[in-house]
Image (cartoon, rainbow, N blue to C red):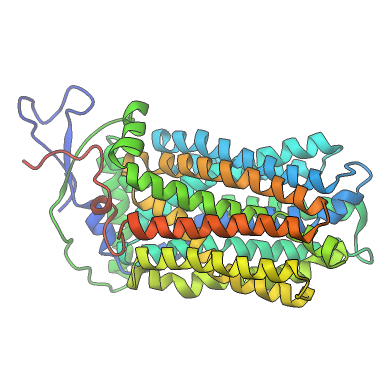
Length: 495
């Protein structure tokens, strides 16, 4: 079956206004029945690499913090380092909201080029910062590009990925944040080494890594099509049909015999946009329980991650006397643990289920952080033991944090998916991500381990609370189509 327009009572097939044309389609079911193939692998590389960029940026900000404090042009303090982290997150929040709104209106494909272009330009300019305020401005714009990327990329990948792979794929992609973190750490090890580059030039070249990588990614994305699911509800069913048919043809050419689509076809009203009143009614009235879950998960992981990782280098330099040029060596094992978590645990989110896995990884992360925080406060850990403790904690926390984005993206309707990601990312990251680094920067500035422990306990409590909320109110979305998990707003009643 292909997408086709169906008669509307009281009208001819060709409707005269928005909402009067109704299409019957099996495109979502056809996408969900596909086996994993080369198309999906290339899609993951071209789009999922966004998380790698964010990991690169966050790691660079932490790894070069010592060099930034020693820069004649910037002369940053610990508090300034924390402020820079907060500014980056503020940019990501506002970028997510603005570009998320545009993504649902203009399409996924347009926006993942626009946001990547902004990121490349801003991170390149960061390398040329001449004082503290210029550095903060360019970090804000870099964050805006990354925040916009999250909304366009997560919605696109989920709308192409077959339902039975969606959890593992989404978590693994989010875990590539830590591949970027490893790249940033390795780059800082080389470029901050005074025997190789070092000095003021070293940290500037570090930020150049992101700009070069972003240009490569831009070319990789040229072949990625628009989401057929987005096209279908935006009055372009013919283009949606052409894209899906072309994907299926590649599988047929490779010898695959595709099973028939399952379930009844969808009946969808064509529309060019979703009014903001309907957006917020859907988010906070119709699906308010899901909204509470999404907000809680994203806020907890944002505080937990950003508070600790943005100030990771400061803890090593101020409490363990690690030279700033050696920070990268400690980031590498930390990044490895974070990447392995989603990679190794991700499949369980599809098999065991979302509610059990999400709640358990959140609670376990919180408990482990509280224990390691106490050991840190008691000065019972060497720098190596502290690094191992963080590796174990974030093996679980990385899977938990990735599942927060998965939850928000798959539990809200197609028409507002990108904006839903943006809204909850903005609220959660705004509350947890801006406050976290700023608070931890001030706590570390006190040089009192007891004060730092307070910050760790706040992060641990938030994670445990989020785990409990998920266990009580979460949605079992594993192996279900996106349209089954969240009914499209444009879905028409059966004939």
